[in-house]
Image 1 (cartoon, one colour):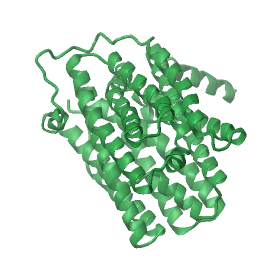
Image 2 (cartoon, helix red, strand yellow):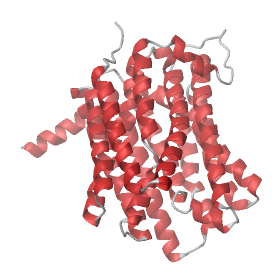
Image 3 (cartoon, one colour):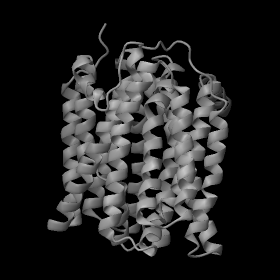
Length: 403
């Protein structure tokens, strides 16, 4: 009887998943599969073709900064144009094309260009895609819609590394061919994006101009609720360093390379399975409550990694980390879309995504310096305690949509 009730509940949840949400989710699945197929082997490939660690760092820094600023610019441009679909289609197409480009030539400038093209593609599509998702939901279903999209997106992060591991098991060291293989799911994403239809409810702003950094002016135009929320989200971003530090800590705990990649796949699998049901729960208990529960779990994970390092604790922490991601990443954008004006959704999410990219670079730099100057556990203690401070901020501040 209980099983039947669960099935009925899941069916009712799925009725909110419209055709557009399905297509966007499949596009994200295919694209993330292509990207994550290359993620574990990217540093190895770059070193093999002559990139130093310093040059790899510069490459990733330039790529992420480009993605950050383009998210803000194209998010606002999407609002001004009153269109979403062309930005989504172009963004995913550029990311797909960039994969085989890296296999064709190994010149440093060519590699820089291909990697930057991938990140520009991400910047072009992000704000428009999330605005499309928001337009397919009501305030009461935002958690489910964004949660379902994150589940499908992260499923690609499971399938991608698993495919790479399987391929490299049979063809070890054949990295360039893997870049060509990664184009196949990217091509599926391009074909799926051709099925998207524009939401006619979005109105263009014919007199509006989109200057390169014009999205930064949105801070003054935004509601007080948006500004309060953005401060909290970016404060958390500043204490939340790259996932690579967690993987390095797992490596320090004695896990070999196969275990490290395996536990990264495990984390993504937990994330993919949990994002949709937690999104539905967030619609019932509130987006803010769910987000704060995620932050509490995140703080516990980092403090746990700081105090111990045995295999079972590492596995438990990565399980918790997957639940945290499911409870926060899609929820934060759903929360933003609920408190901003509908016609500014692309700008609001694009501005957050742009600043988030910049703050993430700062966070990873700070974490790296703390790790270098002190020790790994200090980095995790600082992150855990910093997160507790962010939780206190959200408990004190009341972030609500104005009447």
